[in-house]
Structure formats: structure tokens, C-alpha cells
Amino acid sequence: MLVWTYMQKNIDGCGDGLTPTILVIFGATGDLIARKIAPALFYLYKARKLPTTFRVVGLARRELSDEMFREHLRSAFLKYVGDQDKESDPTNFLNSFVYHQGFLDTDSCYISLAKRLKDIDEEWGICTNKLFYLAVPPELYKGIFEHLATSGLTIPCGGEEEGRIPLEVAMARSTPLPLTGWTRVLVEKPFGSNLKTAIELDELLGTLFKETQVYRIDHYLAKEMIQNVLSFRFANNLFEDNWNAKHIERIDIRFFETLGVEERGAFYDGVGALVDVGQNHVLQMLALVTMERPRAYGAEAIREERARVLEHLVSITEGDVVKKTFRAQYKGYASIKGVDPRSITETYFKIMTTLNVPRWEGVPIMLEGGKRMGEIKKEIVITFKHPEPCLCPITEGRHYKNKVVIGLEPQEGITIQFWSKKPGLDFVMEERAFDFVLRKNRQGIQYVEEYEKLLLDCILGEQILFVSTDEVVAMWSFIDPIVRAWKGGIDVIPLHTYVPDTNTIIEEGKKIE
Ligand code: BG6
Image (cartoon, rainbow, N blue to C red):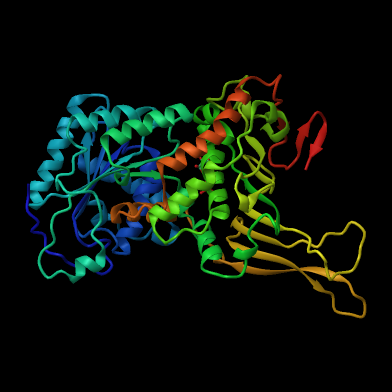
């Protein structure tokens, strides 16, 4: 085993500043690296958050030299980084990228990769951290994991328990640090294509890695406003005592996108809106807004509470699917390239459910999402019950309800809607709002901010923003029966249509609000 000789430099502001790290990206010439990973790494590099000694090994089938690979990334970089960064020269940054050609289904690819990584370790005279990123279609995961295992690449060269060395511990040491040389694996959603395949994938991962080595990405967990749900609820004492069935009438989560399916026809047609965003992002939004207070701010406690609440989602039984679910497809979807012309894949869903926990007993929960909607609206709306007794004018049928709206798009922020007396002689109420806007005119590039956080946290060994195996199982357990029932055909569960770019869902000629 190599001995740690790397002098601890620039601890402040350089990620963990400790262990040199190699990020191996499978599928390195794909869209994911160009759009998300390379720009996110660039911002981390500029913020001096990456380990001082860092290398990216991109792996793909094409024959490319290191230089050609860097050129490929340079053009993607100019396309995808923000306007203010287009002038930056990424040459130094791109110098840490090297290319490794290989076919992912061959032993020789992993043997040569192992040799390449060993050569880097020897060049640097240390046992580096290895981070494997699977930026490939999920059907390739299994083969890659198995090959990683048989080639010995899953075994950390440090030979130590997986784990981070907390910065304060590292800084307090006067002697060189022991070697960690961890191995971690980053996996993109979808984790499996249903409950069965998700469990199989997880079991396979479990035989090769410890749960602490596996980082399952749901980029929603890294969104500012989603992280803010925990702060809003648990760093304040304003609402939490009323955050329950006694005071809350309903919870609505909306995930409306104006984007359509565009070039993703073939992929999307195999999943549909519910699996694409409902099974993951929407359920994570729900978990954070309904979970119990975690015992501490730490990955174990937070992930445990997220999983626990998701496990209590009331399953939609076969008999209930017609009543409690609704699906629709936008007109014109079936003629998109890659989509089956007779496709019954939904591009819009609405699910009504509840949580079988005392805190939320009987509170209706509406989960709704769609592509090509009339407006972008990604939000969590908490509607409070009409106060009893209410010190308000008696108006027949009028309900004075408060709402807390946690918005992600079009505006990131929190709005608290309340009633106030209108100035004047009469006792009349009007609705007012306290608005908190997280940031005005955000010039974000889709995914990049989230991937910065995810990549950094993975390097630091922080799992809060990653999905645990229990969460994966709980989310699929809820979604699976619906997907299965929907697959049963449109005679049993109708597939409605809607006019793209409007909010008009047509059900047998009726408009559904
Ligand atoms: C992805 C889905 O996971 O999330 C896409 O596959 C969807 O279909 C996207 O558009 C939404 O992410 P964001 O960050 O743009 O809200």
C-alpha cells in the first residue's frame, strides 16, 4: 500500500484539500458531461473547491486523444457555461482531463483502466480517491458494476474504511494524514425501471459497495429552494407546530414544465411523466415538506426521516387507480421522433394520495406534473384550514385560508398568504402576502448549480443530498402499482389529451381544472 506523502496544502477553500482525486466518467463523450459535469466542475475549479490534485479520466468508445477530448469539451464548454464565463480561458482546467478509450462491455476496457489509474497513482506517488460516475443509460449500469468488481476497481487502494476525514480533524493534525484512498460511485436516476429492477440493482450494488460508497443523484435535492424546505421548517419556530393534519387542509405539489419532450422521444416514451419526474423529484419534494424533524443535521438522520415518510404513502390499489389517478398526453406527442405513433405514454399526471402517519392523517395530497403546459410552475402549496372560530366577516361559503407556497419556478421563494382587514370603515378582508424572493433574475444554467453541489458533496463524503436505498424502494413501491395499472390499457384507465402550451386538459370534451 502506498504511504501518504502528499503534503496538505491550501486546506482553506480547496474542497477537502486533502486527498488527490480521480474522477472516472463512463460515457465521457455524451451530453451529460458537456452540459452538466464539465461546467459544474469548472465552477468548482474557479471557486477553488476541487482537491488541489485532481484528474478526470473520461471513458468512451470513440478513438480520441487526450487533446481531442479536451477540444471536444472546450466547444461544449463555450456552449453551456454562462455568458459571463464564455471569455474565461478553460485551458488550465481542461488540462486535468484525459481520455481513455474502451468498450464498456469488455474485460479489456477495465483492465486497461485499472492500469491507467495505477499509473496516475504512481506518477503522483500516492493512493488517490477514485470516484466513478456512470453517465450512461441505466441499462448499462449492471454490466459496468460487475466489470468494476471483477477488475478489482471497486476496492479502495487505501484499504481503509470508507469515510471522510472531517476538515477540523485534518487541520488539527500536525503529522501527515493517513491515507484514505476511498472509492465511490455516482449513479444517475432512474434507479431501476420498476420496484423489482431497482431492488435487483441495489442488491448488486450492495454486494460490491457499502451504502456509504454509493451516491444516487436526484438533482432536486440539491436545489436551493428544496434545501430551504428543511431550513424553513426546522430552523424556524413559526409554522412547525401547525404543520399537521389539525391545521393543514391539503398539500399540492405541482411540476409544470413548458418544455416538451424534444430530442428525448425514445427515452421518454419508455418512462412517461410519472416515472420521469413523479417517482423522484416530486416525491422528494413531498418527503421534505412532510417528514418529521430529524434528530440532527446529518445524512443518516435526514435520509432516515425522508425514507420513513415515503414508506407511509398510502398505496393506490388497483380498484382506486381510476378514482385517484389521472393521466393525459399532449396532442402531437405521438408524432415526435422516437415516440411510438400508438404510444399511450402520459406526458401529464395527477395523483391523489395521503400519508398514513398521525401527523398527516386524512390530509389530501395532490401530486401533479406535465410537459408542454401553459406555464412553468414548480411549487409546493400548503393550504391551511379555515380558522374556527374565525374573526372575520360572515360571508356565506367564504373560507379564510392561509397558504404557504414554496416556489422553485418561475420564481424561487416563499410566499405566505394571509388575510388582512381592508383599510376603511367596513369590516372587509382582503388577501395579502409576505413574499420572500430567494434571488432576482437568476441566470442559472439548467442543472449546473445542482451538479456543483452534488459533485463537491460526493468528493467530501456528504450524503445528505443523495437518495438512500430505503428511499428508492419506498418511492418505487408507491409508483409501481400505478404504472402497472396504467400499462393495463386505456380501456381501463383512460388517457386524456390536452392542447400543448395550455392548461386545458380535455376529458371527454370537459375541461379539468
Ligand atoms: C429531469 C427530467 O430529471 O428533470 C426532465 O428527466 C425534467 O424531463 C427535468 O425536465 C427538470 O429539471 P429542472 O432542474 O429543470 O427543474
